[in-house]
Length: 114
Length: 120
Image (cartoon, rainbow over all chains, first blue to last red; front, side, top):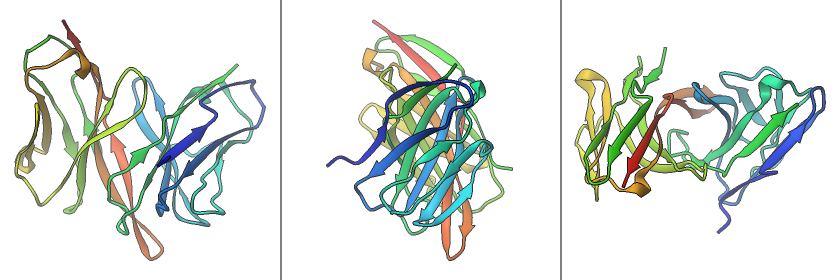
């Protein structure tokens, strides 16, 4: 029962590079989400998806791109990383048809942009 | 606009003390859910409880209890007889319904978190 996994767990990159954070869930959950966690801000939603090929912006989408070609995967790409994108990134998923069900989180990816 | 406020940034208690973490929320929706998550030092987010807006009954789970009061828009969390293992950051969150084509999606609005330190 792997649940929801994220890779890599730690990543150091340089300003301007493209970085992709992977999220994979084994529950066949419909909804998936990407959040970033920063001191003083709690967790903020970047993007979310209701199903394969259905995505929408959250609170802080600028500088990020997502795709969802398969239900189980929801990669997050930083097209040109900036230092302000240094953060801990959490992926989450939920099954419910209403989307209001409990969200279960992956272990997080700590990204440092130098 | 939806908002969650956890006014207590840090709380420090001695083991066996009771401690209450405050959560105040704002929403215009009549149907919503409230959540508490725990983030231990290891960093993962652990789901603790979900409450819907139509159920104001208090809930108890072992040493944990939750007090939901719509009249004051609060959803407070109490740990009785705290233990060192309770040391963590606790987040309160509010679900925000959003329409995505034929589906109703739920986004979480998080408070800033309360860091609880329980000392032996």
